[in-house]
Length: 235
Image (cartoon, rainbow, N blue to C red; front, side, top):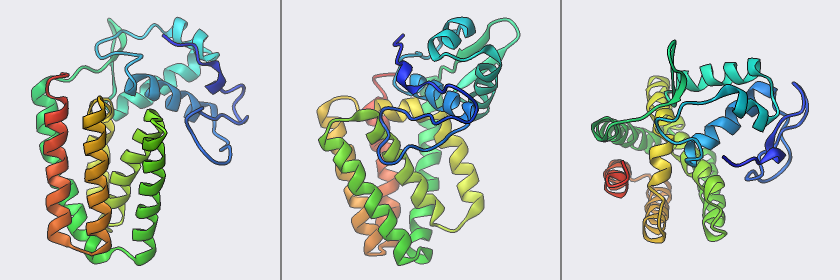
């Protein structure tokens, strides 16, 4: 496990900044900093699926005590990334191929609906915000800066759902998207898969700007089918 100590928070109110973030330093609580760091370790595979998390070792690496670490693990369990059991403690959740395929099918339907609604209800400024996020994501892709690229990638999906204007859709989508973070990250492995994912996102922006509701709904649903094709041999 890597000991990237430049991400650790020194106290409950001091600034914490992951090295993959860009722009001004954002002040985080210790809880938020620990959650973010452990989540990243799961997403990038440092903490692999099925791995039992040794709290003392991880806490020592992050430079935090067991109390904030345990609170962070509880939060990540609520996201579906970790399982907590009396016998084994915290274990990185392991999904079956069927779990993943089923979840991607549902996510594709949800995002297709969100895309359709966004084309109808989003303001021009909201669409411009998504386009700006895409431009930043492409910059991360061109720099081959994979983790910040991935975070922006996921933020774009979240933003499209958010500008649909349907709060129930936002809530349900957030639950499924959170638990699939590691799986979605695997979908960008290899230059061909990564380039294809960027191309698909470029299409999202074009269709959203054109307010092509049917086209964007199809593109988002297809994106989840393509994600399954990119990850099915990795799970």
